[in-house]
Structure formats: C-alpha cells, structure tokens
Length: 242
Image (tube, rainbow, N blue to C red; front, side):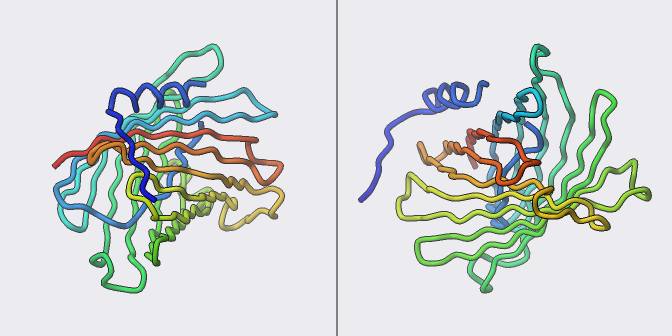
C-alpha cells in the first residue's frame, strides 16, 4: 500500500504553524548520513506543557550545507516565547556533523556532531557533542545519539551533563515514515541521577515527504518521570535544494 500526498509547501507551512503555535532544547534525533552539495532551510517549533511551570514555546531557524560527502555545517537562530512575553532572541548555534563511513560500508553508520551555542540575554554559552549511530534493517532504521553537554563558562567548575536520544523508524512507505522517539537526560557525569529524577520523553513522530524537496515532521512526546514535562509537541518544516 502506498500513501500519496498531493500538497505544496504553502499548505505544509500553514499546518506547521497551526500545530505548533501554542521549549526547551530542541528534541531531534540526528543521523550520521551526509549528502554532498545539499542545502536546506529548516524551521523547528516546539511547545512544552509542564504542570510545575508556565508553558514555553521555542523556535529555531537554520540553514544547513553539505560541504562534501562527509561533512555538514549549519547556522541556527533560536527564539523563546514565554507567557505574555512574545518571542525573544535566545542565541546563535553553530553545528558540524561529520560521518566516518559511506552508507552501508559497515554494520553501523557512525558520525559525530559538534555544536557551540552563543547565548543572548545574559545566558551562558555551551558546547555539545553527540556520537551518532545508525543501523539500517529491512524496512526499519534504528538511530542512536549519545549526548554530552557542558556550559563553557563553568568548564572547570562542573562536570558535563550526559543524555541520549533514540529513534526507531518504519520505512514501509516513501511518503510517510512513522517512528517512535525516546529522549533522556541523566544529569552530570559526577552526579548521575536516579531514574525518577531524570528527564525521560517518549512518543510517536511522523515524517511526511510532501514533495521531493519539502519534508515535514510532527510529533508528540510524553514525560515518563515526575521531573519531566507532561507533554511536548514538536514540528519541523525543511526545504532542501542542490
């Protein structure tokens, strides 16, 4: 069975804004796969609902470029929208993804992700590293990210925070790719938290290939522990070209 979607970029953008309009760090599972010469503009929004705090909306606008067959670089602008405040610029992110093998060359595709965030409004700059692993199976793909993050200003005063992100996707249809994603934050390396005190999010995500060059992702993540937000809705629209 094939699912065909005959829609354009304008329709996708309208639905993206509708679903996401009412976030803390972006929740996205990164693949080590790199496409040489690809250029992409992405707009990401998520909404976090937390019983212990006011709802927050986060926005990210990015430009990505596949420099060659092993490297992608990206520039992000980020905005936060708190209750009654309106969107305020939160910072700039620089990103570099490097892949080590050609797709299918090894049992697992492997890459690395480096990010440096320049914070605004008195915030703290931070650096983040991810190990990217991906295994392609018949009709499914498993992607794993190991995450290490550390504030730059407190480099010698605190240990890095560690976490993970995982995605299991079903590739039965070309236009629609359903998946389940899991995100966790375990605390600082020197003071790992017990499970009830960690942040754990799990939920369904769907990728829609609206056209060859327009991709739309939408998902809902739900908290598994008491120190996690109750629900987070997320969406991203990507337009690519060569």
